Image 1 (cartoon, rainbow, N blue to C red):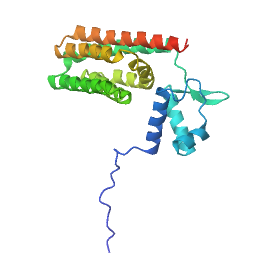
Image 2: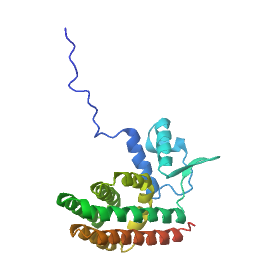
Image 3: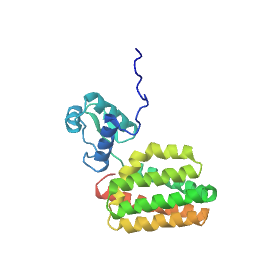
Image 4: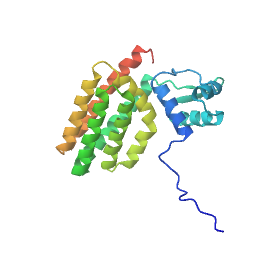
Length: 229
């Protein structure tokens, strides 16, 4: 008698693992200030709050450390990393250089379908903004910039941005909730998109850099208000 074979051994990659779900929860909790800068992250407490095993918590903490959201203290163990004003300024300087270059190159290289995709991605971001769905704003903004870099053929530059993305989004949470930022951001992003549609590479670069410079200014103000040096 032949033993029946399973229909498929293919892993369902659309299903998130417990580790991935825990990582997302912890990352959001740090971005949104549930865990404060310098706060100690006790494994036992996290196991109870997340309802997962200690091995998963340890994996998550190690991953967050690679993203710059967690630091390992010599005595007290892992703590939420403090993002200083100087570190924030450096991140925005890198963003301005890379995003400006990506916008310039994309305006020159991308085809009409790619530009239209960027228009749609930005529209989705602004729709999330109008609904005050800040988590979705982060997701859709990341998708916009990923497409911008990829359509410009700058995959390596996007890898650099990705290595900073957890800290970029930590800053982005601070800036997108600022008074009046909803309309201001929409105006800034529309200038980038319009320049891309016109194939005006210089204007696209300038609009992209102006956008980063403005959020850098807002972040610096917010960090000063919170007493971060």
